[in-house]
Length: 308
Image 1 (cartoon, rainbow, N blue to C red):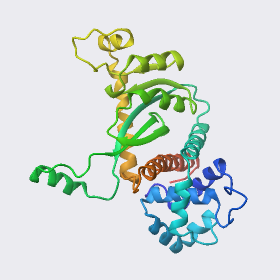
Image 2 (image 1 turned 120 degrees about the vertical axis):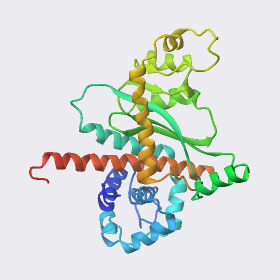
Image 3 (image 1 turned 30 degrees about the horizontal axis):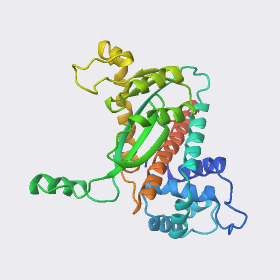
Image 4 (image 1 turned 120 degrees about the horizontal axis):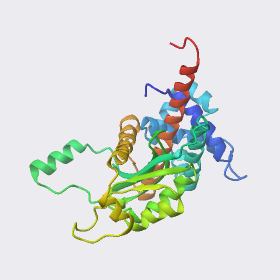
């Protein structure tokens, strides 16, 4: 990760963790490692695509990284695994909200509402090579070795290129009914002006929620059903005069997915579905931390004289 080093990322993750987590879970804790420290290590694992055992080895080898996180000793891999088991989705959502608050704090003068998009992508459950999967399927005409995958749904700010809300579940699954919940969670982070989505989220109920409850513009192509079917309301408007120029901005969420998978990881490892979901949510948090630190470095270089 050339743009943001490990020490800078770890420092940012630790600061965000201290803002959303108490030092210890209970008064009976061993007080050997704090919760913000362990959360920062989990984010480092997602940032560098480490396993639990690799994280223990890397921390043992990197003295400056331990000093940055304030670690007097190295937590073993079972300590990290058990902390991930206890980590709740609400805690990760709070950390994501903290990164959004810090990111938008640098643009308080901008009063324009955010343009957001909602979409989903698949994450691999392990380190299996997709090349050999495709080769076996096309050349051997054999079925794929799995029927399910992890589906990661996000709402992203298209202008700032960071995540506002996220969820994960086993796919394949139709997330049309989940749009109000996802957009509502994103609206608590920032004011929304436009919501863009593909045909998977096409329904009159979603249009009504976005326009009446949020006071935002909704752009979703009305492609569900046959063309001969008679549609009414906003879906009829989408068929009659679809704003193609505005809808082109939806492609930026694919750029977000590409950045996450190229710069961080395309996997959500774990033997159970619950652990895979936690890994996917941590991946979104780590991407926001990366964007937060990258934006800070960019602003500092642009404001300091003779920075080049």
